[in-house]
Length: 189
Image 1: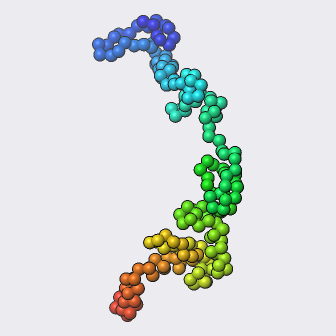
Image 2 (image 1 turned 30 degrees about the horizontal axis):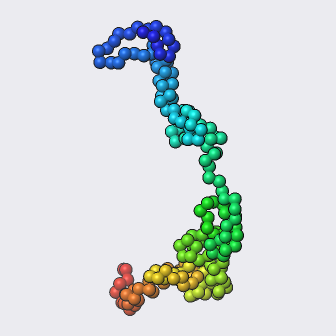
Image 3 (image 1 turned 45 degrees about the horizontal axis):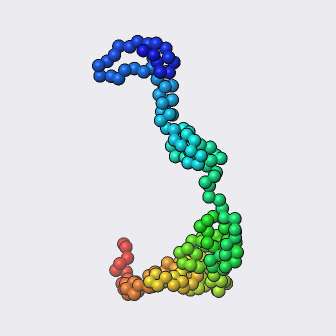
């Protein structure tokens, strides 16, 4: 019998249950098996149709030149901002707002979640010289909004913004007052 890799003649004792041997040694088996596996992995290029064997299963193009053909490029034309309507050069196909309206990463999140652009936020913060609209002692860093209507109310410090959650619930006031009037009965010993 001839080896499929090196064409040398070899003999073997056939086993009734086993398949006939195709290779003369483990080295030839490794070479032949890897070649067969590579041939089994060949597929046509998504662009030119030429058959190729990718090193990674997810690759669908035979070369970098073929893969660059179908790449979606950045938009080359200017767009009008959805808020201020000034023209800007987008950096992606999904971008709707200019950098002036989004500001920082936090500004972009504020715009998406509450609809407040960076210039609107700046005007809200400057309303009381950068201070919280309630306590006027700490810098305004949080945007307050009504949870029922979604309406934006003002720029607050984080402490006042957290306390408003309790103030909005009428049962909290009664429970807090009863707690404070309870005297030393509830104090830990």
